[in-house]
Amino acid sequence: MHWEKPPKEQPCYALPTVKELLEKKRKKEESSASASRQAAATSPVPPATIPLPVAAPPSSADVAVSFQQWGSAPDCPGQYGYTSASFSTSPGVSYAASFSPPMAASYSPQPHIQGFGDAMMPQTFEPPAEGPAATSLWLPSVQPGFAGPRIDFSRLEEARMLLSAMDSTSTSSQDEDGDTILHIYAAKGLRECAYVAAEKLRDLGRLEAKEHKGKTALLVGVAANQPHIVQDLLSLGADVNTCDDKGQTSLHLAAYYGFPAVLQVILSASSAAILEARNFEGMTPLHCAALAHCSSKKPPSGAAGMGDVQLQSRAEDWLYCLKMLLGAGASVLNQEIKSNKTVLHLAVKEGNLDLVRYLMKLPLPNMAEFVNMKAHGHTALHMAAGLHGNSHQEEILRLLLSRGADPSIRNLENDQAAHLLQSGPQGEQLKLILKRRSASARRRVASLQDRL
Image (cartoon, rainbow, N blue to C red; front, side):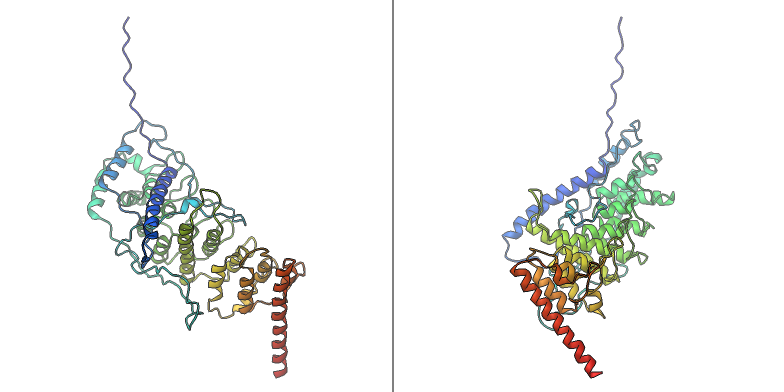
């Protein structure tokens, strides 16, 4: 008896997950950065500006393949034939002392694009060490209505035609992990496709659809370092203050990852962005930028750690983000909720000399009040005294004292900063510095009282 063979089952072509897309993008950019660093090492002339981390626009073939993949598996589980995983670039909730650099956010500078942030980011961020400008505030200005390159309308029309040929369910529904087609396009950096998909979801009232980690397409675009897509989504009405399941808004993510171009777009495109928004750890975007900058000052661990050149580049990005937030009006006096630390406490506790230097140059109306703020009873001077074995301990102590730190203040255990110093010759030397400063302060107080 002859049995007919069943028809050969058509293969199911699944789209890559958001995690896979971000990892692929990161590997490609790290490979490009490695070549750039090798070229820079042999070049005697440093670049005049830091290129913005903006991905090149996708090719027509890439757009067409993406749409064909979406339309090739109508019978696959999950409607779209792909599954979503956790964001590899999603920052953790815990901001403990063991904080390490967010390696997934190591986006390397891309070729500079004319018209997007030209002359916006000078290479050197620190104010002059000497001269009249040494103590002046240097903050980058946020341009209202700042706009990047215009979208390519010919490619936009092509994307509209391709998207209109797709099944309407595929373009508007979410899979079992909550991802929409817009999440995928935002992660992959397909600007025109993302724009068309965002238009459709906006008309359906679903532009704020969240995937299983609580991220909207806007937050995915921020985490993927896609300033053009972030700008487009904001122009289409995406909520700039929406947060994921860890309470992180677009400002938190841009500051945490150190993406100046994305942060510039957010701050300029929407005046509604809440600078003092708190994530579920009680931190503002300013705290996130400061803590991430501190992480870049720690030596890389293991073979997978970032090199010195890359760490320096990342440190400059984080510091620039911090300056942008301050320039936009973020308060340096704000304390994170769990431990009441300011950005100064965070910098001193991690021995971050560069950040302490910058903060001490801010022309605050009452610097002494800022320096002597307490975090669960400890001033920044107490924390500096606890930096046993840190090569920057003495300089940080002297910086704090020069800006009004009071050595006589006691913590909740009734200890002054001098009581927390290490034993041995180094501790005794630092103790003398604190005693001399304390005696000098007492003489100034006595002199003022005599005048009164």
